[in-house]
Image 1 (cartoon, rainbow, N blue to C red):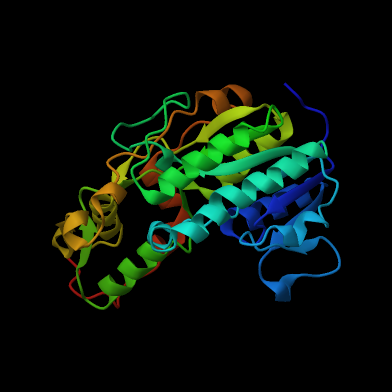
Image 2: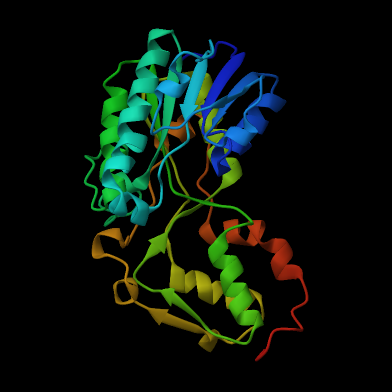
Length: 305
């Protein structure tokens, strides 16, 4: 186990949800942190670097000397990966592997974020050593990307995550808007998520970066919850009637069968052994993240019971 003090880090995709939070976290810890963006307007002469993963050579000659690097950027929308498979393959597989190879050759330890979508999502709390069996296009790309990275050698690691939940989670905001207008909300009863707070993802990424152990790590919530059960929890917290939730099947609303997940939770034994991580309960996560919303008066909501 390596615990040598880190001083310099590179975050590929530093303006994404996880990348930006990790950038701030590592900076607060006193590290010199470089971050990439594909938004040219955000590039400066300091530690913000331009990178388009469709053209990774834009960064090859400007790679900073760093102890560790983490690849957070990816095409993550299932529909986008299906609609643009060639672009998704370049962005999610080819470019990260090329960048990782160049960084490892410079002595950098490289971590790549991945997803529970590399599994078939038919059993809960999957162990890291279980063979990948992706059903979605996105999952197949992630599995291929993991294999390409780990083939580079011992200076590489993969961190798989479940669904990151923040206070800007669009689904919850949309549901609240519908309820506030007096409507009812449809929610999938056959499609689940395993929520994970952003802080837990950042802590896990920091642990993997600091310890620099090769192989696969997983960070996950404690269990899965259907979108219908999440919706029922929401209306209860808002003091509304349960009949404001209309359970539906995802496949009946246009979700491809291969994209429907019965389970996405994963085993976290390896991470727990290093930093004591305890997978959080799904409803506890939503209570914490959206607690302020739930505490507000909702006199404007119609049909309260």
